[in-house]
Image (cartoon, rainbow, N blue to C red; front, side, top):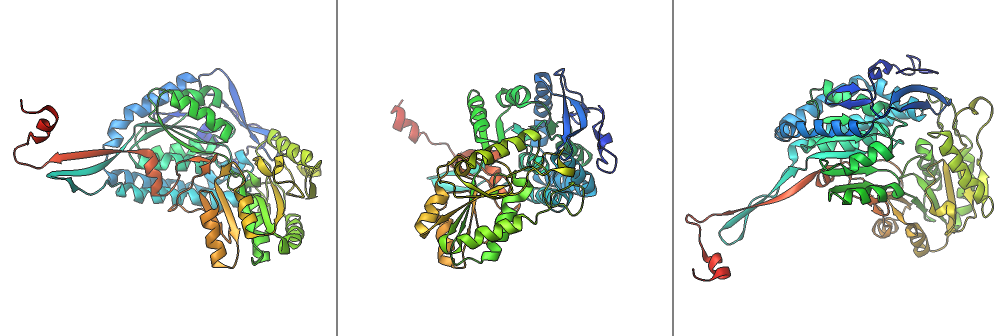
Length: 511
């Protein structure tokens, strides 16, 4: 292991925690066995900050074996015991909050104020929520649904969960996958994105330090092609949970089907942002800029398609462009920075390609370029506003994952809602109106897993997150997530003192 570039103790205070490798198996860090290395790169400078050995199939096998060995003990722990362990985990994460915040900013390029105020507190809150929810994993109450028989439903853990997480919110995605799985009594092997493993490893170490038994939480850091596909297809993995693009999600589903395992997919998004003509224009403009630029637009719920009713359209475009131009790009560790870089130069070039192609059929009002001077070595891209694009154009229909907002006008409410639904995705959406009836209609008719009214982007631990259509199926967060990580068993008793043979006679006759 080595820490080159700008991985100073101030920017990366937890670096010593990764000295033994980037695989966390059965309670300890080890080196990967693939024979290949990978570098974590600070996207704000392009400098390598941590190099590690990638996981291979043997590491996945070892992690799954550790999780399988830990399952009997962990699944038989009482809900109270699992709850106590998760409460301790929340406390450990809170104690190390600054380590988590700085590691997340370093590997992702997120502004430190975002990781301090959103990513880390959200993770602590999510951990505390599942600590409480672990004590409420109830089945159905008993009932006499069939004569003298009593039935009830048991909710039981599934077994070893194999999860694959993306690079855009590595800490929160680790939490969303690990917490409901282990609160329900499962054990887990998580493969974070090889670009951003640091906070997932910190999370696993915190779990061990909180007293969660070895093998309950395991991390394998490797490529999707090698480690990820081997994990998804592993015969001892009972469930796969994947967050990422719809294209890769289809491949995950194909592999998982071969072993008929439980599958949870949270995939891409192209969230519509519908502004009716009675909306508070200033609030909608601020909501659009915040919703489009959160995490430099690398968010599957980000506002990407704004549909604005004709009377407000010109003012909305003008004010949104003006507000975007005030957004401060800069060093993620500088307190005044609003927007950091994209995750990599390759991702910046991908986003730039979409915008450059759009110039042939649409108009770029502001942005549409990488900044120069002191930010030229990072993967930065200016906040970008595009108008005059057709509904069926690439920039309207494809997921860019960058700081780009497309604005289109509409005339009638029917048209606005039709355009909002004209997408293969259905993860999130928002509608802006002062009219409760208009707003309520939007919540009914927009086909998305979450519809915000007069806001865009906030999430809370108590409520579910998950999509419709090509955005996948299943829920993260909330007690609804337990439906993903448990299986249901029907138990039925014959309550008669002497078991009767009547039903046997019905089938077999007198014997």
